[in-house]
Each structure stands twice: as C-alpha cells, then as structure tokens.
Amino acid sequence: MAGWKDYIRRVEPYTPGEQPKQSNIIKLNTNENPYGPSPVVCQVRENMDDLRLYPDPSAGMLVESLARYHGVDADQVFVGVGSDDVLAMAFLTFFNSDKAVLFPDISYSFYPVWAELFRIPYEKQPLDASFRLVKEDYYKENGGVVFPNPNAPTGIYEPLDFIEDILQHNPDSVVIIDEAYIDFAGESALSLLADHDNLLVVRTFSKSRSMAGLRIGYAIGNPELILAMNDVKYSYNSYTMNRPSLILGTKVLEDEAYFQSVIRKIITTREWFGNRLKELGFTFPESGSNFIFATHKTVPARELFDAAKEHGIYIRYFDQPRIDNYLRITIGTDEEMQRLVDFFEEYLK
Image 1 (cartoon, helix red, strand yellow):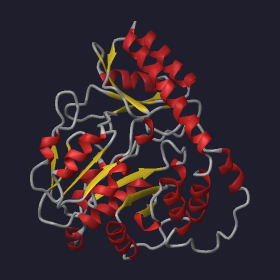
Image 2 (spheres, one colour):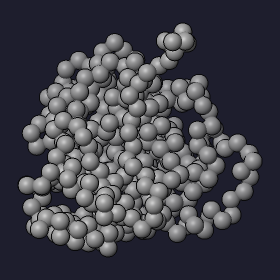
Image 3 (cartoon, rainbow, N blue to C red):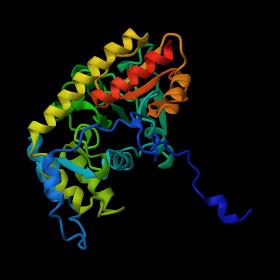
C-alpha cells in the first residue's frame, strides 16, 4: 500500500436524498418546494450579464436586503452557499474547545459529519419517546449547542420559551438554531437575539423560497459572531456566493405576497394530507415543516418506500435506529399528494 494513503482523511459522508434522473415521477423525498420561485425571479434572470466578473466577496447587496427584511443591522448578517455552507462555517468558527458539542441523536445528519471532519468532540442527546428534545439534556457543560427548529426529520417545532430556556442555561456557549423549516411552523428565534449575544439563527432560501437550485443560506447573530464567521470565510474561500444567486436572492425578498401565498398553500395541503394519512392507519408527530414523518400501524416503512418507488413515487426512508419504521414525505402539490394517497389506498388493501 502506498505510504501517502495513510494520510488521507477518512470520513463517513453525508448521504443526500436521491435525485432520480427519469421523468414522469413524483419527487417527495428531498423537501423541495413544489412551486416555483416568485415571478420576479424569472423577470430578472433574463437580463443578467457580467458573469465574467467575480461576484462581490462581501455579498453586500444580499446582506443589505436581508438586514432590511429582518429589521437588523447589516453587520449581523452572514450569507453562504446554502445553509449547509453557513452551518459548516459556524462549526469551524465556534466549536473549537475540547468540550463536546451537543445535538440531538435524531436530527440533521450533517451535524456529526462536520464534527468528524473538523475533529470536533460531540455528544448526541436522545430525543424522548415522542421524538421531542429534552431541554434538560442541554444544561450540562458543553462546547456548543446546535439543533434544527423545527427538527428534521421529525418536523417537530419547539416554542420560543423552550429555546430561551436552553439559551439561559448556556451563556458561555454559542447556541445555533437551524431554522430551515421555520416558515412552515411558528415564531422564529430571531426575536431572542437582542437578549442573547451567543445565539446564531441559520436560515435558507431552499425550502420556503423555492430556490434550492441557487444555494442561498444565511445566519443572523450579534456582530461579533458574524465578524468571526467572515474571518473564517475569507481565510477559506472569499467568493462563496455566485452573482446570479446574489441578484436573484435580493430580488425575491421584494415579493412578500407571493412568498406568503406559497407558504399558506403548502400548509393547507399538509393538513389535508395528514388527515388522509390518519384515515389510512398512519401516525405521525404534528408537523411544523413542509414534510410529514409517518409510520403505519401494520405495514413496515421499508416495504412502503420500495413499493412507492416502483410506482414512480419517491419518498425518504432512513435506515437508522429508532426511525427505521418511519417515512419522511415532502408536501408536494395537491395533485401529487392525491396520487400518493391513491397509491397507499390501493397498496394497503
């Protein structure tokens, strides 16, 4: 064996949802928004030029727009290539002690990947029997705290008093709230920023903004946190955001009416679909996201996953302890969800 192979960094990578190549399928496995982005995006993208030039490394136009939108100062905003890039930068920036970072055992599966890659000690905190976070598990000494709210893949949303309790018990640690699905749930933790300088809230344009293909994510926190993240970014790759993403991401923030209409449409479909699942013998936690995390009372999840795939319907199955009998089902259009209901009805006979 060649000696250089001894020095390769070996990690178990994150496994994204399958991206099927064939047409005429129903894709409900990666939590993409079934509706297109605001029409203003289509108007602007036809007139973009100057792609020969590097984008603004400070992403100034998008940072300023996000600051106005959320009512914060520009020095409180960090942007990156999707929330994955933003979270990775946050891990690199803030989790540097010899104390373990804490996150749930059933959660976004990229967290342990980054921790292993960056040599960060970590401990997974078990969710309770109802798949809820146990806030007391985050009272102990740690090197940082991170979890999604709503959680993924369970879809469970925790209220602000729950978040504030964890913040109050961790004044010496950076607490990261990953709000990829917050627009489908309740109030954001952004309202807690004024009272907690150790809070970092991470958001994305991939779900509610229908712009997963452009990879736009951002974080909001106190200026000292954002400055530290930018120092890491500029030490790694200063040109993280491409020019089309900066332009289109800025423009889409101007169409609030369309944004809210899409959110309402998805929530309405989610509630209808959830009721149909219950009629078919499924159970699931109340969802605050654009997906439902369901199990059937008699038919194994893996069997349903395989059968649906054979019929051209892609949903998500996790072969992991505690959740290997659950399916994560993205909320698509009414027509797509009806097709899935029809399939379940026929198969469960």
